[in-house]
Image (cartoon, rainbow, N blue to C red; front, side):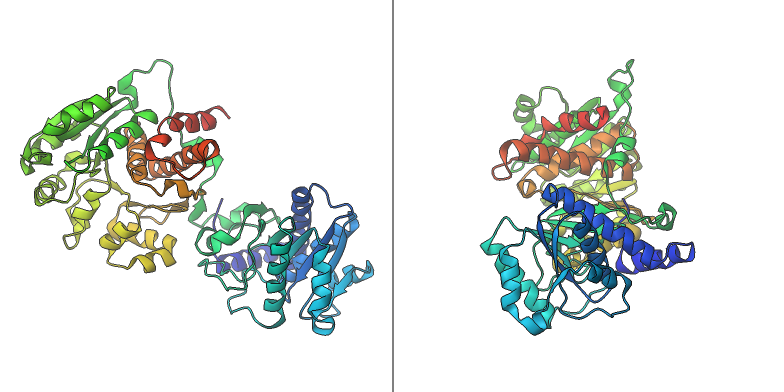
Length: 515
């Protein structure tokens, strides 16, 4: 599903009006969607007490429409409007005809609001949507703080936000401290970037998308989207019945050093578990006996060493030969940052035999030490940095990158002419032409050593099976995240380790191949 900025959403609404879908029609559709979702979330609204916070703009109009429908369906609805709506407002007139009670905090003060909140099953936050960019203040802020206090007293009270919780910047995810923490956010038309950016993303609860009737062609030119299940199914590589191991490609993994023996093992297993036909690990010779006892399904090519457990620069020629016989090469997992490893990469990376390449971990760190490093890469590549590695590669601070993750990934992919996977909660995948996919997964269980190595192996495994680089990265990020969700459901997100993901990768694939 497309991910649209505030400006893009306004433009789409204007173009919709030009083709016969004016704002009142979209508002009616939006309010009805909010009412429908509220009915589902509460398990029915008959007899339920619902307080609707109505803002001064279109978001408040959506709330008025929702209030009308909920009233018609038997809910006991009240309105809280810190700023009065114009008497000529059609939707306001329709709720007045139904004699829906209003809590006027300007006249009645906070006591009336507090009393209303004591007996409320759900609060619908329709104060401010994508158009609110200034800090919350005045009565609006006071009401939101009162709702927060009421929620602490009554944890069962639902908070449902319309489009985006009031106080979150729809584009950046920045928040005002008066912003509510919602149980559910019903975003209208299309999700907004701020719903997938922190700190705002922590306030949205369950994300639901309300269809307001915008024609899909209005969003065709938007290049940023959230990866969804239909897209994942379309990207899955085939598994013909008459296949042999060569059908699913050969993956070469180059990595490992004395201090980082496990990293390439996790990467190899990640590639195997998503279906690569044959995986070869090229690692310093003295490590061979250790890794061979861990990985029985992998073939090996022990590399010459500069010293115990450290690859020799002279191994570059042998790796280039192996890469020429492989459908994908993964380089960097656990290779270390020694001068010998740096010299090895200096000799290897200009070799065209590496294509297609997935470059991870210390492969990225060593590369970042040279100026204009991207010019050293002869092969088409997927780069998989976490924010600190992205900082080294780009020269921007971690704070700058994290403040606009989508923008940072898109800018880097365009400049470096490579597919960039910016890891983290809601991982971003971007390619040089601007196409960008945001992962729907944010799982604290993945914040542990080795999960990035598994992801690199998963992406490379899909590349080995013939997936184009961008598609392999999108698919790999999604399936890796899905596997982590399966682990979280079984174990929770505390104590999850990287190897827990491996047996769940085929289960994640099975779900999307069978549905």
